[in-house]
Image (cartoon, rainbow, N blue to C red; front, side):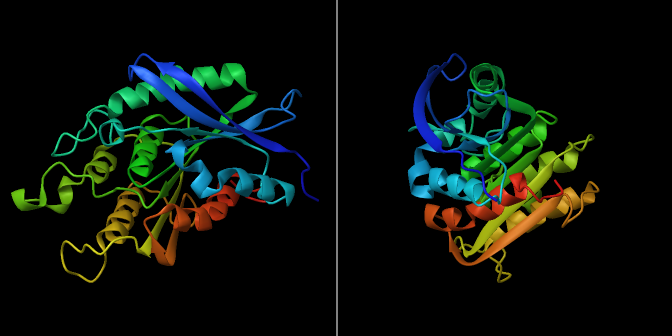
Length: 269
């Protein structure tokens, strides 16, 4: 039987000293949060797209159907500085994009999470992080760097091309920053990974091997994880959407797969 919890969504502003601005967050939560029950937390980047993604309806339906446990979802809104605030903390790309990503990381860890755990009944042992495109890269970087705070990470069409050298400046595959960070890591975090790409995510094919860059970059990121001893099908799930595009429509279609993988009642995770 499903859970009859009613979900609601509200927007709040959290002032960030680190980002020097008010950060809007969308909070999707069970109305009956006055009980002593605690809930897993899902942080998501690009909370401004929640309506397009249908997050509220998807979570409500899956919980009601008994497909997933009740959770709290918090979407962090990006603004016009997104290209500077998202990325890899401390490692801007070749065009200095993402140079504020370290500040975003500090905002999430030092400002947002304490606020959420003080305000809502959050189970601090079950915190997942997900994002889309550049927000997916940001989620992966924070989760990788900040385990065991985070236990699961979801990367939808992740910007795993993020590189330290331009294509016309002698770029090599080793210049991809997230791949290099994983490769150089001595300690492997205790994380579960969910990756998604679409076969029409883009058309670019840097090395002309017939595989679009988004798929190649994702699969080769997974390969780096495997070299660290993580196993496909156990710690890693990969979903490739036939005709899937780089947009909220595709991501909303595959969102239930991620949510059930991360919070499914019958999941072994």
